[in-house]
Amino acid sequence: MKNEVKIGLTVLLAIIVAIVGFRFMRDVPVFRQTLEISAVFDRVDGINRGSLVNLKGVKVGSVSRVRLTPENRVRVTMQLNEDLQIPEDSEAHLTSLGIVEGKSIVIQLGDSESNVKYGGEVDGVYIEGVTEVLGSKGEQLAGDVSESLSELNQFLRQLNATLDDETRTSVDQTLRNADETMKILSETLENNQKDIDNAIKSASRTMMQLDTLTTDNRPRVDSLLVSLEENVSELHKVRTELEQATANLNQILDKVNRGEGTMGKLVNDPSLYENLDQLTKEMNDLMKGINEDPGRYLKHMSIIEVF
Image 1 (tube, rainbow, N blue to C red):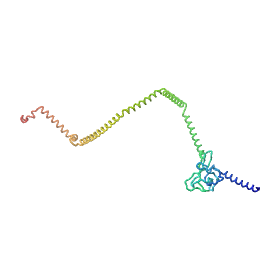
Image 2: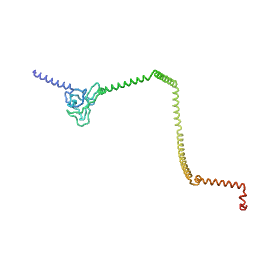
Image 3: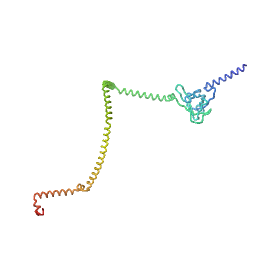
Image 4: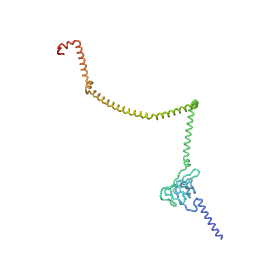
């Protein structure tokens, strides 16, 4: 083999190795084609060439280029597996997979029937991670914590000023009394544990006896309930009759008050009472006169006319 051929083969092999290495370093499949799509973000903190592109937790490609657009936005070009079907309304979310793993792009599939073609574009959405949220809110949180600590210190100072020596002594005495009371109560319960158990057993036996008594006398109880229902029904009838009699009596009294009928006239016409009273007086006088001098009233009558 001539030297020229050896040199040519060496150069060709070097070119092949360079191409393979270049594609390998860019995390691009060496022996198969890829699907190239892009997404535009307002910011791409943590994303560089070679960052992962995931779909449902599975690596499906990597970032090949990161460029600024004339509108001062960032276009990220991704190399994905050629066999992927990405709907046109899909979104590329730039998010953090974890505190250690760093940033990556997650493809959120849409519902469109049309798929993104080679060189197409999907919407980019930047999602702040936990560390970024904490960083942006750190100053506010620090101020809130400082204010809370200041209020807590002020409260403790006021509490310390309020609790003088006498108050502390009283509180300590109260706590000691409560502790002694709890000890006495515990000892009492412990000493009377048997009595308490016996009382519980007696109550249980009593409940069982009551249940047995209720079961054995259920027919009598049912009969008593039936009798009570009948008596209640009779009382209801009596109440109805009493209400009717009361209504009739009210009608009669109403007529008497209006002066209707004999009783009404006797009650409401005072002249009848006066005439009766006068007649009674005259009858008394007549009877008194007959008893005192009967001849006065019989002198004009003969015995034959009388009998």
